[in-house]
Length: 314
Image (cartoon, rainbow, N blue to C red; front, side):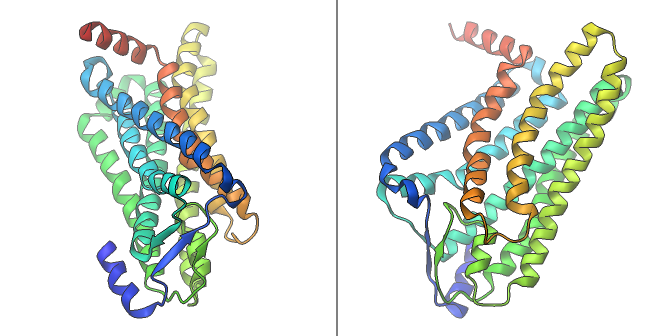
């Protein structure tokens, strides 16, 4: 990806680097913001790494749901790493420049991993639907092979959906200005800086983004509608247990879909720039920190696995 962008950058554009505006209103709080975001980044990495480690170390957690959760945690580590380190550099050193190739490489990985996360969330919804509504067939349907194929399909779809618009945008001319009103290289702000006709590629991107978000959202709604009907029919003890397995997933879903709706569903991104920035901050900083906490604090099986791991260490 970077080599392709670099070849193009040297031929059809006068812009060799971009300036990430970041958060100009709070620029004087750079050191404090650096510390806050560094702690959030490390907490997210440690939390997601913990989920992956515990899942693979404890045989009781080697089930389809935890396989999908560990895959989700792995992708989320890459997702935040595509954005946060550069943001930390801006806060600490004030260096807001990013090369043309690095900018599009960041956008490439951010969007592909972001789309993959949405597909994984849809798969998690499907998994909960089968576990609660089709318990007798769950083990036979969610075999290790099927689980692996589902995760592979999520990666492949994320890659295919976002590859074409990002590469196409990188092939357009950029002749100035070069200030991106954001804290990372996102598609919308980049498209606004091109001096070529961007309407076709913007329409393509927002159509694909809508398809990714709407498809995963629709699958989630269908899955949880069936789950709700099934849970209502269960005895009270089973109802509580079934609801507890889904509640953490629903919390994560509400945060993700809520923030992304305002950024990618609406095509016009020239208005409410600050709001888009804040929504993106929720998606790239707040949600990744909360996800491991939500999934572990509300899960007795993870609690037990962690206690056993600590006992073995002692």
